[in-house]
Image: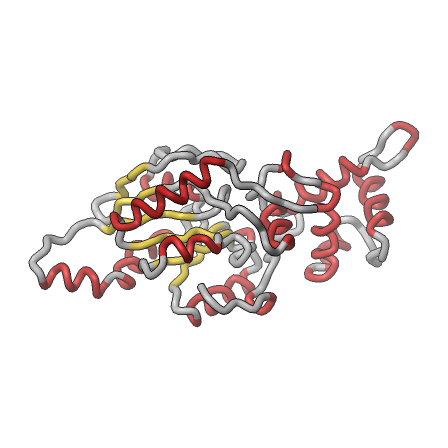
Length: 288
């Protein structure tokens, strides 16, 4: 299954981010804590270049805590500070201003030495679709300013939002890159909801997801679907899940479409518990 998704508004968003870069002090790069590598748009590195950056590992409650700790260490080794947050509950957000001021200390010290009056931090939030940017902005602003939705592509224009007296945020639409060189990256983005389901082959996606669970969380997979052993044949596993969950057609045949939808839905709704779909050691990452 080849996954590509680059709507026209995303190309425009890239141009706008580039144009507005000089207006901000720092970039908040929002990634999905379940897939911190796959949810990082490699074009962002080209666009923001050497602008100070803080990586925000959002949806940390949905990710494996031990694996997330590994990612925090990984980013630190690459010279990037990161925070684990939950934009829905606000967990971790109290550290945002302090972390930003720490990163920008030299810049603000220079401004102060020149007699420039202290001002709010100006930040730009960037990230792929459906990673939680609008939810984060609403939580920080303590009101519903940015549009939110559980489908990608909700935010399509830039807007400045004041966060108290200490910070001003520039929201940007989510940007995916034109081509996924690694189709596994596309699969992970699809599983976590960054790509519209209407563009996907849910059969292929659910098989990929089940194989991943077999490798990484076999006991959770067994417990969820009442299995003593995991079958080698994915068709056999589909049959078992279909009959267990009542995903049947006329004549008692298993409805594979319903099974595929059920598997993806149960992963996204955390029926298997917190899951991390990748670890730093899975990749040979040379630059950030």
